[in-house]
Length: 332
Ligand code: TXA
Ligand code: MG
Image (cartoon, rainbow, N blue to C red; front, side, top):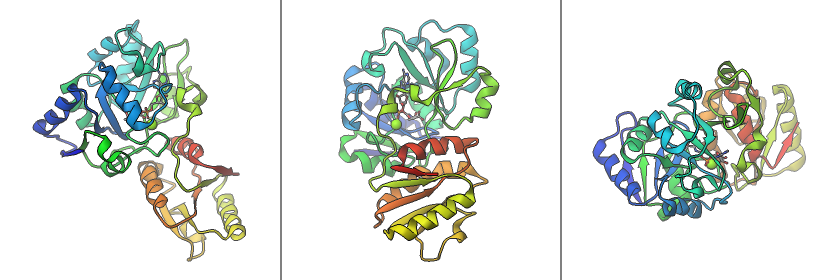
């Protein structure tokens, strides 16, 4: 695998040219977006897209997001988009949000798993924008093995794929640390099918008739964000969380690590093995680090991972969506 290091804010053209030539030649190249790293391939090359499914071990019924760098790309992918809808897309793009729209028939079926819709996103990360400018539309699922936590650092991608990948553009840590919000605009009402970095509070300002239905996403039946060690999530008020963790540990006598917050870290005995996720008053700090922490503690010499829930408000709603999917059991 080639590791192509770039300046994340001002990526070097000559390095990106290597990556874009590889993509144009049907190779798979991982690259950073502002949410998580993506596994990129030419959206119009079915055999390259097929290779993504294969190396990621992704079920073919789970379609991919097509990434673009300019609004004109939309017309290559999407059918029947009226001006009003186009204006809405332009309000939120570039950014950490994906829209499901009616697919144009020229886009290979393998991209969308045979659906008549396509998921499209214009990322705002300087590396993604500059790369896609060179290649045209790129499909990019999160660059993790299917079922694992999404990658927020180049090393996570390298750990999951080693030599199965042709190259990675290493642009350092991603910014939000959680995958994009996904809104389905293909029907009568906009439906939020995956919460992401754009908070629901903000989305409701733009889509007053927004419906939330996270079971509508095609991937909802597959495993997600799984650590190798069992992960137990504790939810409720902060007081209740601390109390139930203390009594859980008391009874089990297992070798565990606890993911807790700045605010609660001193409420547990000194001999607890703890990793601080961040501060409850700055939930973006938790969002940014949570997948990295999940991967780190998974390598520790422990039997299980206990995690404090956080308030399901703003970005906290998205953090909790990911933790709930990851948890083997939730204690309320
Ligand atoms: O932030 C992100 O969105 C990252 C970065 C790399 O852009 N990508 C990402 O891709 O998270 P992936 O493949 O891991 O997740 C895409 C999600 C899946 O849950 C998939 O089922 C859904 O989008 N999806 C894709 N196409 C769809 C479609 N036509 N209709 C409904 N959902 C779709
Ligand atoms: Mg994913």
